[in-house]
Amino acid sequence: RCCSMRLHEHLWPASISSSRNPSTLLFDAVARASVASPITVAVIDQFKPQELANTAWAFATAGHPSPLLFDAVARASAASIDQFNPQDLANTAWAFATAGHP
Image (cartoon, rainbow, N blue to C red):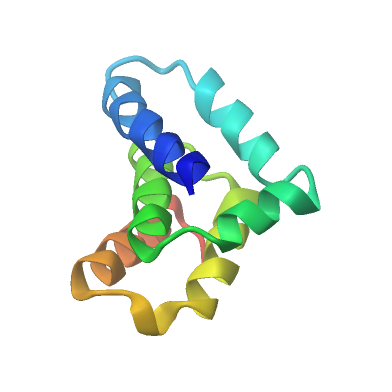
């Protein structure tokens, strides 16, 4: 649980600053690590709906549409869609649309 909370706590401010500064090293590293092994994919699968929404939102806001990360978020979201509140749904839909991810 601590991993997902810390992840989106770091991505949110980075996404805001990334809109002013094109550096995306953090997003590149997180995207690679997020899908690099079954262990990290399993961590994403355990994210709460808000954590999934915030992670997708941060990547979209930063202009970093990592297809593999968005695929992992999509799988985890589909598995827990009944737990999403309207704000989580709206933020996730916006992030996927902004990132151009189907």
